Image (cartoon, rainbow, N blue to C red; front, side, top):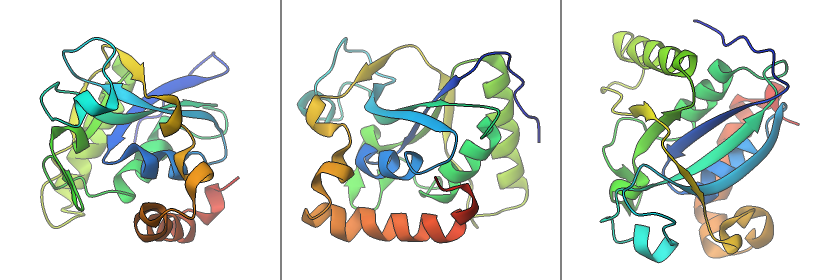
Length: 184
C-alpha cells in the first residue's frame, strides 16, 4: 500500500471510530504518536458542545486528532490500527453507542491521506476482511473542534469508572495483544 512521504517532523490525522474515549486511549499507546486530542468534526454547527453533538442533529462525529511522527509510524499503520480496533461495517453505531456522532470516518488532511485511505478501504472490501462491507466514510477535514477539557485523557483520568472497565479495558487488551510491537 502507498505510504505518505513527508519532510515535516509531524503529520496530523483525524479518525472517528465510535466513542472518542476508547479511540484516544488506544492511539495514545502507539510509538510515534505525539499527541491525541478528542473532539468533533464533520458537522454544521460551529464550536459544538458534547451535549449538542449527542443529539445526533449537528452532523458531527466524535473524533480524535492525532499528531504523529511519520518516521516512526506511518499513516498506513495508523489506518491499520483504526480499522482493527472498531467495527467499520456498522453504519452510525459502535456497540451500544448509536447515532451519526459514532460513525466510522476518516477525515483526511491531504490528497495523499485520501488516496491511502480509499485504497486501504477498497482492499479490505475486496478481500472481505470483515465478512461485510466497510462503510467507513472518507472525507476531507473541514474543521476540528476540541472537546471539552473533561473529555481529554478520559481513560487515563477515569480508569476505574464503569464504562472504562467494561468497554475501554477489553478494547485496550485486544489492541495490546494484536499491536504489541507498536506500543510505547
